[in-house]
Length: 118
Image 1 (cartoon, rainbow, N blue to C red):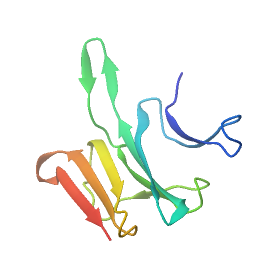
Image 2: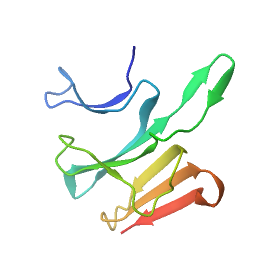
Image 3: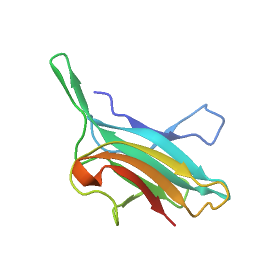
Image 4: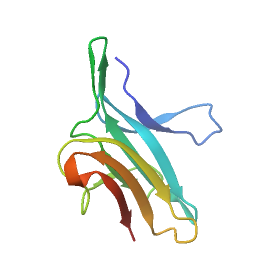
C-alpha cells in the first residue's frame, strides 16, 4: 500500500521523514512556504479514487493544512472554507504580504471558488 504524504529532509535528500499523511486515497498536491519564515508551510490534501471503471474526484479528507514548526505538527484550516467534500485545491502565499494565503477550491455549488485569508 502506497500512502502519498508530505516528506521532509534535513540532510540534502539522503534521508526523508514523513511529516503528514492521511490515508491511501488522499495525497498532497500543493505545498507553499511563507517567504519570510521557512517554518510556516501550507499543504493542500486531495482525496480521490481512480479506478478502471470510474473516478471519484473529491472527499472529506481534501483540505488545507498549516504548520508553524517546519512540519513537526500540522493543523487543518477550516474557518471560512467550504464544508463537506472538496476536490483539488491550489494554494499561493502572497509574496508582498506573506500573511495572505490564496486558495482555489474545487467544491460543490456556491462553495466552489477562490478564497483569501489575511
